[in-house]
Image (cartoon, rainbow, N blue to C red):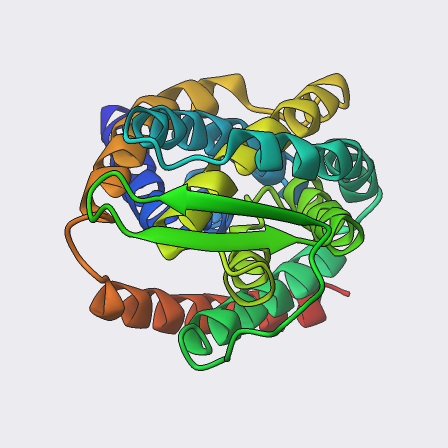
Length: 275
């Protein structure tokens, strides 16, 4: 049992670090790991619902940790994040409820497809060009490190639609949804990359709260597992926010993409077999 606890702490550190650096939130790592552990450790029963609810709690911890670090560095657009949360918060509740209705096979199939889609979005990072939109909100940001000034903005309707989808994914799959939000912030709204990652993480934290509360109400959280993973996720969140300022992370993103594809294919296969 001690080895399992140590393993869960390490999983938390890894997921928190990667999630913070790439802006994903870490759920794409935690959920499949929990499902795998449930299949090899007979003493713990981890259904897809338990994996999602527990992951969302941990994602909230890691995103809070990294958000605090980003706030201290002046890299969070809090007012925009709160606007995005107006749509992502209710959507997270709906996603958590829909998750409770899914069979194990349907969940693994859907989550496997989602992981492959995340891998594709990571692959296209830096290859898509920014789009010119007529923004209804325009902001200026001065980077506290480079002292460069950036102009960015967004259209409220598009921002709320994207945020709703992100919140739905958070409640449905136990992930942060940053894989979708980051391209929107970077390509449509022209957020500077560090500001986008930090703002995305803060929105993920906000969305994780109503989603976690809903999962708790539905009884789909293993609090012992969450407590075991959370300390590592807290450390990982801070480590990831620090590393994101020190490295570009291209190698990291490549390795993460390969891992997502392989895990996604495995989940799709298992899901089809279970249907």
